[in-house]
Figure 1 (cartoon, rainbow, N blue to C red):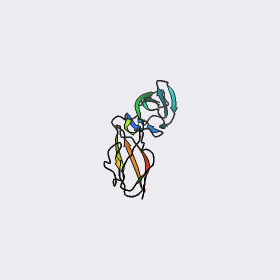
Figure 2: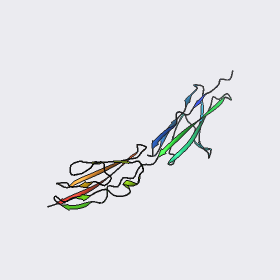
Figure 3: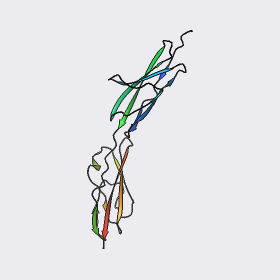
Amino acid sequence: IPRQSVIANAGNDTSFCQNGSVMLNASGSVNGVNYQWFEIPANTSVGNTLTVSVAPPIGTTDYYVTVDNGTGCADNDTITVVSNALPTANAGPDVSIVIAQSTPIGGSPTTSAAGASVLWSPLPGLDNATAFNPIATPSTTTIYTVTVTSAQGCTASDSMIVTVLP
């Protein structure tokens, strides 16, 4: 039986918002029959199937796949996975105000994420829905939710209640 070459392809480098795991999927030569995935630099095995699920730590992690066709021909390829941290969303503590009174909302560390943007909802009663710490003047008790989006596009949300007293 002549040896047939094998070509491994670990896929394109990727990034994702940390939420548990990411799927790595090998492709390439149809002659591959054995697959082995490893985390670099520890050379730790993370799976021996065409597709594996990994939960990389925050930051950059490299993986490589070795594809073997069972006749002594093998190839490997590397993929870089960037796991971006989720931002911190802090809507602040619940507060009570008297009708027609105003209060700043939003806590810390909502403002600590470099390059982050925020969006508050609902808009009625807020002076600025994109401010880190807007002023709320609701006419009725309102649950405000802040959604923080990091520079990498990852999101997190938190809510608080402004209770309006007569």
